Image 1 (cartoon, helix red, strand yellow):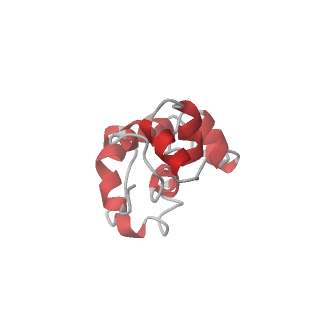
Image 2 (cartoon, helix red, strand yellow; image 1 turned 90 degrees about the vertical axis):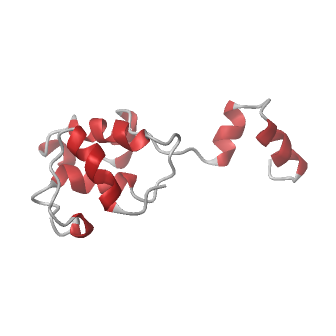
Length: 110
């Protein structure tokens, strides 16, 4: 999970997404930097399925036009390839023979 917008500057820049000078105030700059705003809203605080996912997610956000953001939902962006971590029960179903599943069954979670 990424908690600070400063950690999204490099992935954004590599994907061609402009960033404000003061990224800690990215919400105030939403109109001037809509791609960075959406990237932060989607990425900050979200679980990460793998360590470099924010670099791949920045490329997904960069694919859209500013006009797209008026009609897209979070789910639309995810459907285009934006990746966030998966809840434990989904992981359990994907890896039924995984040791985590066995432990979860032992402790009564699943």
